Length: 57
Image 1 (cartoon, helix red, strand yellow):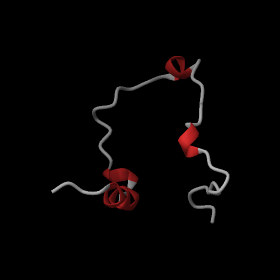
Image 2 (cartoon, rainbow, N blue to C red):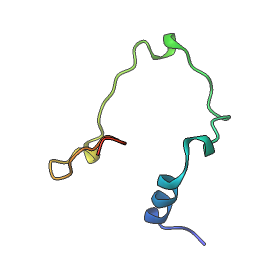
Image 3 (cartoon, rainbow, N blue to C red):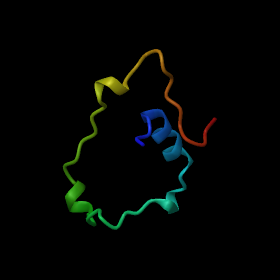
């Protein structure tokens, strides 16, 4: 049975960082990120939804 997106997000939100397997992600260094930029996806930006920081409630 396939889980709904809401169910998947709920489970993901309950995971501890230590439960995440990073072994398939290649290591990077400062040179790799030197020219990186951050761009917000348009669908993520909403004037109706406030942005909250984790742990700063």
